Each structure stands twice: as structure tokens, then as C-alpha cells.
Image (tube, rainbow, N blue to C red):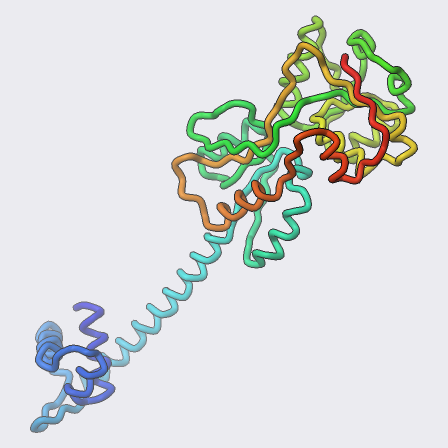
Length: 319
């Protein structure tokens, strides 16, 4: 027995007239008569009483109609449920971001523009992000990935570099220049990022040292520790600018200095990544496009500072 047979039967039962049912179904009358006859033969019982050229639903037909109506109602509910599931799946986005500041202010507008979105954030290290992407446990990863990764699409959002920043009352902020010996025993404050550790290790190893990282955590606590003179921040230049814009007063900014590292590649790339051979949910694609379009790109520090209203006197020295 086919669903199409039951569908035709229900229409014939409604009209109790083959010609009228055929018109509604938009099929030829002989084809419909043949379908009903085959259904009766399969069931081994007539479904209609034939009185001349007229037909009437009999007891067996009424019983089948009740079951058929229930079956089609269940199918309707199933389709509705599956449609809701499909909509949920299409609007779900599982992400992992190495630092929430990378999301920026654009995310608020993105959520407003896509009210059905269901955004799930997982806190993972950058190595764990890649594994989660390959295992399809998350859809999108945002972090500092500085080289191509097999099986992963890597879209560069921002080219940046790691620098040191110092701020009063740290005495290093009062110096015009700083040599590496000045920070030999310095306490380093950084973001919880694999890239931070790798680059810090490389920079200090060049001088036969190991970095003394005393804290890794949120940008607010990082800036608080730096302002209290507990250490110096090692982070990307744009991240330091953002933290300063949020947390440093203009008076303090006059004592704020950024020190780049000479003869050492401290460049990094902020990327949005996803699995190469996977068809992403619709909303995940929108998320990637929105982030790519909205994330700031600056040709120089002045443009970045202007964007963030950093109208202070910044001093940048080379270690």
C-alpha cells in the first residue's frame, strides 16, 4: 500500500464521486478508478458500495478513512517538527573564540539582524579549536593561527604583531628607550593564547631566557595589573590599543609606551577558520561573512587610533 493510494482514497471518500475526485486530483478518471480498485484488491475488501453509477463509503471504507486521516495528520506533525528542527539547525552556530574582544561590537548588530540565531560559545585553546573543527564539534573558530592547517580553511581578518606595553607607575614607562635587559626579570601579563606563549618563548629564547608569565586572563584584569605596576603586557598591538581605549585615562596615557622588538618576527594573524570539506549551516556562513566585513582593518597605527578615539600622545620604542 502506497501513501499516494491512501491520498487518492481520501479524496474519493470525501466526494463519493470518482469524476469529482479526479477533477480535484487533476488526474484522469480511469486512472483514479484503477488506483481505488487496486487498493481494494490489496486490502481484500471493498471500500465503497457501488449503486449504479454512484458510490458510497461502506463500513470498511469508513474504518480505513479514520486510520488514513490519523496517518496523514501524523505525517503533517512530523513534517512540521522536522521543519522546526531544520530551522534550528540552520540557525545554530557553535563557535570558539580565543578572546571575546575579537568579536567586537559588530556581534550585537549581527544578532539583532538575525533574531533566530542560536549562538553557542565553547572555551577552547587554539589547539583544541582545530581538533573541534575537524571533529565537527564547532562550526567556526576565531584565533591567532599563523600558518596553513591541513583540512582547515583559514581566512585572515587582521595582520598584526606582538609588542610590549608599559604604563605608569611602572618605572619602565618613564624611560625613553628600553633594552632587553630591562625586562629580563619582568613579570609578563598576557592573554590565554597558545600564540602568545609560542611567540613569547621565541622572543625570550633569543636572549637565552624564559618568559616569566605571571598572569593570563581577561583584558580588564590584564590592564588592572599593568596599571598597578605588577608587570608589563605582552600582546598584539591592536589588542593593547583596544584595552587602553577601554581602561586607560588620558593622563595615564601620557605615560603609556609601546615597545616593538627589533630583529625578530613577532607578526601574527587573527583568523576565522572552519573545516574545509564541510557544508556549514546557513547561519554559520552569515557569521563568517559578517565578521569578515565588520572586523576593522587598518593600514597604520594612526588610523586605528582614530577609529578608537585614541587622541593621546603615544610613544613607540624599539627594544
